[in-house]
Length: 397
View 1 (cartoon, one colour):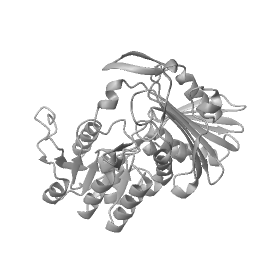
View 2: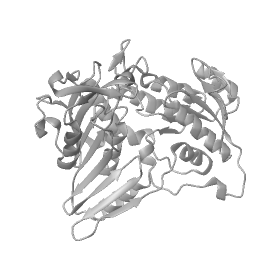
View 3: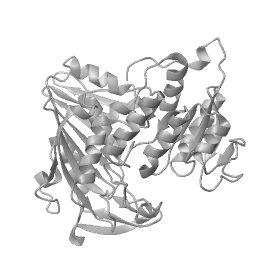
View 4: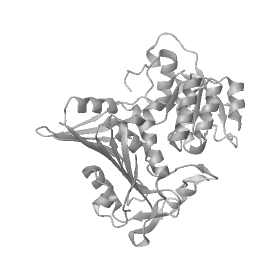
């Protein structure tokens, strides 16, 4: 995750734009489509093709151009000669799509989470490595220059001895959110793992960022994991959950997340030390350092776009920010969630319904304060006195 990004506009030698195919251009994939268009404007890439079950219409392509479209990724890669495949498809398709791209020699930007199970993650990572192509996992927060800066501060003892890392995510999602796609809100679908939960998909960045700030990114960096998985909505997966990870170095990491918040707030990670703390609002690249004997210092950091970093890796040998190996610890958490007992329903006495943007939404009473208290005290919901939290907790080793 080190390395200074290369800014193409500062280079004298023009480059041939790398042809890119985007698989999944609607929903979240729209952000990838716009980012590809941005990098096209800088001469770094060229959108050669879009893979969608239903082709994008003229309105959806307005300002984008006229790329080749097909529902067959393999055929599209062959016909376009794409150097890069950006994959923003359902979670359960990630491994097969990545391996299809790898077979065609296309380098990959794979949306998070990289896979729905640890076995599928290993199949993807091993297959990509064997094919000799580069793969970047789409944890955009790990492109923030704040991550290595915080790691340096911790290593230099800026906040004393590391005590632990807490993360908090409190978002509002209405009931329609869990009907946005056939796989939404599912742990399994048609016999295949999906594991679409608060910790593993919408607030997965909180988990991955907390692991990165603790220095535990590889699978072998995780010693054991405790999970508390709950749901207020009538879904199969979790919408209000907490996890504790103990690393091989003995560091405690807790992440508390809910999609049933009283009000949405910016998710953050707190690094606790014996002489202070560092808070990182990872979507804003904003860092607050609070130390004994010093005034608070707030800094905003730059961010390296992960597709741009992949292009720089291919053209200039720049180090990838988020290769598959850097998500092994995160995938250990996904596996712990996957193999844990199904989420417990939060009793109706502890949640209520409010109007949302697209219909009703469910709100867990007092959950915002509990999420913050978890990050502050490195405790799980059950340890904070939440009567609806499960006990005993599911533990994975």
